[in-house]
Length: 300
Image (tube, rainbow, N blue to C red):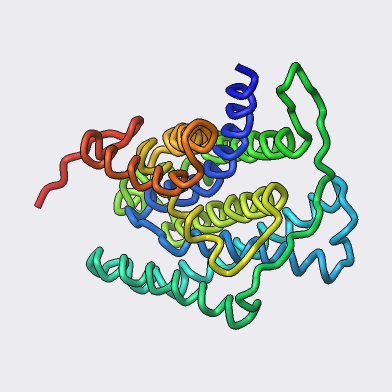
């Protein structure tokens, strides 16, 4: 039983990271009906932005709250700028093009970022800076609650509350919901759709930046291809919860994190990556709209 509760804690921590990345997928899809496959590589760039910021400022071995704040800010700014550039130069010119053209472009942008990063940063893995000291805060029996797990969960909750406030309590959030419902009608009502779409990319990309720092905290190794597998799992989480649904992305991410941790704990770590593909196949067969998604009819 102690092992089970420890796996639950680890699974919630992992699911929190998946949630931050999955929210980027689901926000862009909700606005543009587009799967932004480059999102996972935006996450990768965020990790390197935080890494080089720590190197430049000389705080690689100075763990603390100030280091955490600086690295989070560096990753969020770097990812936001990159997300804005991708939207402006890759997706906006193709907004009225066939969906297949946009899909191919998204894959192309992803590959471009991965191999450009290998040229610029090098293909060898790098050790992420020590952000916070990992210590046991509470120990009940054999169950340990560590400071990094608490920090990951707290930061994720803070980001989700901020996102919820932005979408449901602000004017720009109302505009985002209007564009998500109907782009044409929103533009006729005076909403600057280009600006709202660009802002959506900025918000989604900044959340990926937060996720990259949290991953670096828990698993301190980064490389130019680090976004491939975690991006796939976050995408599966978004599909599982219902792509386009913010609550669904969080629910799907938690299910993914807990399922993966249970598979590792009670079966074998060999199956942890295969789990994502299995869940994707099952959800596409039995409930393509996801757990919280809505079935829609498309007129042709």
